[in-house]
Image (cartoon, rainbow, N blue to C red; front, side, top):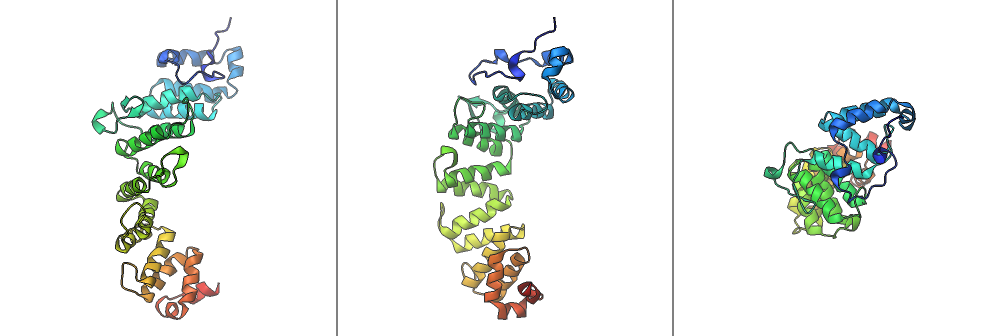
Length: 290
């Protein structure tokens, strides 16, 4: 009689609260993979070679192989059925972060080893979307994103936190002060989009005290990194004397930088200032006549 594969990897609907007793130890994974070439098991693994490989790799315990297996279980790829519960177990083991009541401790000293930020961000997504957990939980999702930044040094995680607070996404509290604070965290570590967002916060006085000077400073930083809209915002600041002495010449130079990359607002601004633009910006005529 052929050995029977537990339903864990195919059609099980194990409750997220199921204990770790259902987890398959790494040393058993090799046996399961060996059996996968037998009759019915080979048929179950419709992509048997891919399935066997990903299981063998995960058995060696490496970070990348566990990550691949977790992704396969979340997406139902590599011959595996979707198994959100088991995927979450793997992601938690990859995070290497201690938890208190399922909330990660955002302290480097509390880690059990090298942190794998992608797993922490995926756990956050699972909580935010209610995947592999009993119900969606915005607070836990945000806590894991914050841990990915604070412990896992993931810059984009800080930006994600800010955006969630900005829009009150996933049922989270709408908090413009927290949004601005997290945009700042991301901006200080070089996140281009966060720099532009922080500039907008200062321009509008949203979550921070209004400051044209601070807004311009962050717009320039974002623009120098290549942010298209920020280039337009810098030009607008010079044209309207917001945080800087008025200068149509400087405005045209910045508008041109954005216009040549396709920004229509900047193109319209150059048409409005065309007489000055033709003097200070070589090649502007070709752009406006295109």
